[in-house]
Image 1 (cartoon, rainbow, N blue to C red):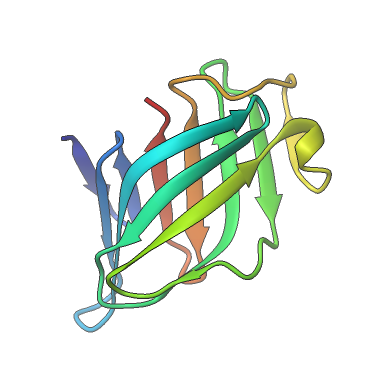
Image 2 (cartoon, rainbow, N blue to C red):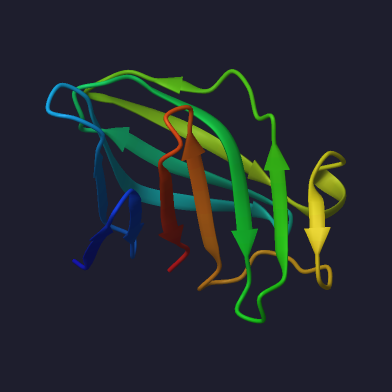
Length: 128
C-alpha cells in the first residue's frame, strides 16, 4: 500500500487516501476496486472511512500521455461516513459534458482518476 499526503492532495494506488480539513472534519476514502464497463465507462467502489460525509463535485481522468477528460459541476453523489458507494466515471462519447484536453482516449490500466470534493479536496486513484 502506498499513501501520499501532501497538503490537501491525496494520491492512492488502489488503496487508501486521507485528507484532513480540521480537527473536527476528516475526509478519508478507500478505493476498493473498479469494474471496466467499457472503454468509456468505469465503476469505482469507494468507501468513506472518515468522520464527515463527502460530496463529489468534479472528476478528472488523465492518461499516461497527459490527455485529460474533466467533468465540473458533477452533482448528486454523496457518501456518508462508514459507507461504500459505487461511482460511475464516464469519458469520451459517454460523457457529453466532459471537457477534453489533448487527444481522445479510452480507459486503460494506469489511468489516474481524481475525484474532488465540495471541500476542495482532491483524491486521486489509479486503475491498476
